[in-house]
Length: 311
Image (tube, rainbow, N blue to C red; front, side, top):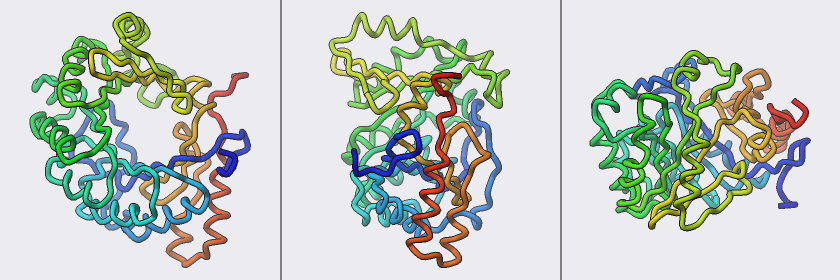
């Protein structure tokens, strides 16, 4: 990866995560609901294309579209189509899955490779408690449809919460295994640096013991070196990946991702908002490629491990 642009800590920038909106159609209990934008203030498909075009010049290989909920945008298929025209190695979307059945085929036809679906429970009452609406069956149908139209891999992101869904992990695994879907278990952060620490302290469920159980029953274990050394457990034809909280040096040391906010600003670090770099304003003012590359590089050189070895 010597050809990749690297930050001042020798970390290559491989992936760009673009929040195409911060609007959402559910109200999850663990969401921070960061400042909502009116749809008229969101980046246009052409502006998102321009951001991706400059990123491609700098060696970015992967694009992930997220939100909020990206599928609330009526032009989401057009966005994927434009990004796909730049020939990235991988284009993915993170979604709550409510509109996924509606858009799955069109998204694949537009060039989407894969999808991550947020789904924390298969219990209708628990689902309504978590997201505020009774839409579980729509999400399940969207996951199944994604598999049918050829997205690969399809992943389910399950945020594990103590006394809410921590006893449902294996039920979720059976569901994902049945449909050829990968299950990602996400441990919420417990750190005092979290903005919503009361919730996290109340519902934090440490996955260490469960991961020991997975190690005992797994047919095979693989380590994702460039994804914070996450472990993937292959069990009876299914797959579980455990995502530990980001409050650790290993997460920061192996971070290869840059983010774009819904306002079109470069966000060098997931855990900071004090070093954002405006990009969209310069695109709208007609800045040259050279200027936009310099702005991107400024954002990249603003990258600094939030958790360092000497912290």
